[in-house]
Structure formats: C-alpha cells, structure tokens
Amino acid sequence: MEIDYSNIKVIGFDADDTLWVNETYFRDAEAEFGKLLSAFETKNKIDQELFKKELANLPLYGYGIKGFVLSMVELALELSNNTVSNKTINAILNIGKDMINKPVELLDGVETVLQELSKSYKLIVATKGDLLDQERKLKQSGLLDYFHHIEVLSDKTESNYSKLLNHLDINPSEFLMIGNSLKSDVLPLINIKAHAIHVPFHTTWIHEQVTEKETNGKAYKTLSELSEVLDILN
Amino acid sequence: MEIDYSNIKVIGFDADDTLWVNETYFRDAEAEFGKLLSAFETKNKIDQELFKKELANLPLYGYGIKGFVLSMVELALELSNNTVSNKTINAILNIGKDMINKPVELLDGVETVLQELSKSYKLIVATKGDLLDQERKLKQSGLLDYFHHIEVLSDKTESNYSKLLNHLDINPSEFLMIGNSLKSDVLPLINIKAHAIHVPFHTTWIHEQVTEKETNGKAYKTLSELSEVLDILN
Image 1 (spheres, chains in turn cyan, purple):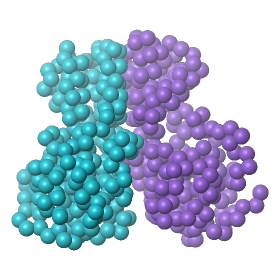
Image 2: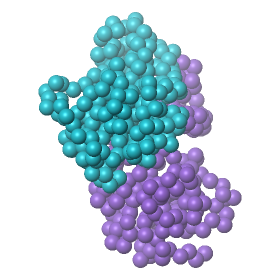
Image 3: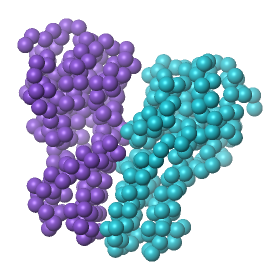
Image 4: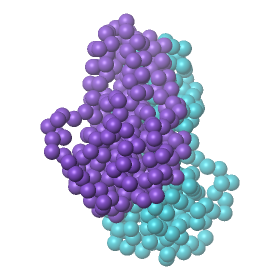
C-alpha cells in the first residue's frame, strides 16, 4: 500500500506506550492486586472482574490511575463480600501512589526520532488520561522542548481530533498521528481523512483492542519500532 | 479605584462556583464523611485531618473529585486505626459517585450575562480540576455555545495563564478573568498585567483563601453578584 506523506506538516504523538512505558505498570498493578485478593478468587477471575469494573466506571471516572484505583477498591469490597481487610485497602491505595510516582521510562529511539522530525515538522502531543499525570510525565521526560503544543483529551474520538485540528488551524491532510493504539491513535484519524502510523507496544489494554473488520481497507502503516518512522518521512 | 476596561477583548470565566454550584457539594460530602466516621472522631477533627490529607495528596492527585475520594478512604483507614468497616469504605466511594453525578446547577444570572457579553467580547472558560468532569458539566450546562475556547488547567498559576494567553494570541491587557477565587482567578492575572473581577461564592475552600497582605494594592473589583458585571462592561 503506497501512502503519500508529502503533504504532512504537523505530526502528533501519542504519549503513553508511544513515547514512554505505561501499560506495563498497569499490568504489574493488576498482578499485585490479584495477589492481594488471592484468598478470595483466582487470578483469572479477578482480572476479568477488574476489567468489567473499569469499563463500568469509565463514564464516571475516565482514563487514568485515580479511576483505576477507585475501581480496584470497589472490586475488593465486592469480591470479598465485604470481608477484605483495611490493610489490603491501604495496599491498593499504595499501588496507585506507586504508579503515579513511577519515573518516566522513554521507549527506544524516541529522542532521536523527535530530534530528527522536529527539523522538518511541527510536533505536538495528543494524549488522553489524567491532565496532571500527563503534564508531570512530559516535564520529567525532558521532551517538552520538541513540542509546539500539548493536548490532553478526555477521550480520543473523531470529534475531539477534529476540534483539535480545527483549533490548531491544521488541515487533516497535513496531519499525521503516530501511536500504539489502533482504536485511539489510528482509526479515528483515518476516518477524518488525516494520516496515521501504528507503532504497537508489546502490551495493549483489552479496551483498546479492535477487530480486523474495523481495520480492513484502512490506509495506515504499521511499524515494528518508532525509529522506522525516519525511513518513511525523511 | 478607577479601572479602565476599554481595552478588553476577551473575557475568561472560571467555572466551578462562578458559573455553577460546586463547593457546596464538597461541603455536603465532608459533612457526610464526618457522620460516617463519627464513632472515631469529632466532626471538627475529621474536617481538619481531611484538609491536611487533601493538601498532602494534592501533588499526587491534583484537584477534583477522584483525588478527594481517595483521600477520604485513606483518612478513614488512618483515623479508625484500620478498624473502619467495608460498608463505610463503600459509602465513601458512593459519596464520590454521587458528586460526579450531581446535575449542573447554574448560578443566578449566568445565562443573561453570557448572552449580553458574547455580543461584544470573545468568551472563554478557564477552569481547573478533572478534565472529564469539567467537560461533562459544560455539556450539561447548555452554555457551551457561548464560548470560543475551553481550557482545563491542572493548576491556575501565573505561568499557566501566560501560556494560555500566548497560545490564544491574546495580550494580557486585553484579557479580563472573572471568578470566585482570589487565589486562582484574580491574583495571578493581576500579577501578569491582565484584568480580573472577583465574584465571591458564599463558600470558599480553605486552600483557596488568601491573606489581606496578598490582595493589598491589587487593582481588581469585587462584585456581590455576577450580573453586576454588565454595569461595568456595557
């Protein structure tokens, strides 16, 4: 599939699992949560119920660590039939605090790619999740200077992307989004006639997974690592 | 004190307790929390400890309901020496969900003021707190059409306001902020040479209170209700 990237003027980067590690910390947290509740249920059942709980609370809590922790506390009460110990509740709160305090771990090649691309393109960040967490990670990452604009979206929908491009005065055909999630970073962009490149992370949250039917015939490239972007765009 | 508002082109509105009721719901939640823990401590002590806990967690959790709920859970464990019941923890989670689900209650005169001012000025919203919560409240408020731009800030500092004005290409001298918090909506604006009008809400969170020394000699007006803005600006 030949895609013409010659019109691109602005490149948007997803942040979590595109610029730095994120999902891994959620998987680790789930493992810890499973251990804390192992007296009550199997790891498999706990994982399934936690996913259901997060999804049920998503309209209320949105994406991010705080909502994740609140869902874990709620599920711990439920799964244990209100017999879970206060010590365990406290341990759950601490899982969340540890996640928030995790140092930012850049993915391979990120800095080189941003350095190169910033010579020829305007770069922006478009991420979802908690405003404060994302700002903190960007500051800690040392990458802030590469970006002309940072946008934290409550959700990565077509309509939110359109508003963003409109607000930044960018034509969709001039915009390329790069990210690890087909659902959030690729498909909505293709659907509004912008461009997208998919760079999968080794772990994807089930909620971000899409079916083959949804991706069929969509004009986007998938790369195995971010630095390959330079072969395409330079 | 005569202040010249003739240069103003853009007016920024705070949202919580300026456009709609908010702080009242936090006070109600604190009262409910106090009742839940009344077996362990006096209402006064619980209030004091909750404020301390929120402040201690602010760098981690930021502003908003989710962080508030996490702080209440943590304090319930602490104040009860880990003897609080699961039922109470669950009741605390439900306080938070009820807060998130509260319908938006517009303050007196808001719609008239926005209608009038939108004829002669560009209006924006500059609010802090949780991105998802603020977006939901704006949608529910029915006020979205009055605003050219919505900005949710992680904190209302001078530097964040300067970035916002810069990004929107507004000169500070052409910008007027209207809000209920001296600390967040007034002083930082005066300090960056923009304008501000203070419209106090009947309740102010202690964290938002400032000393007389901080306001001495600052050129801003205080109004007793929002509709008085029309006398000044029209």
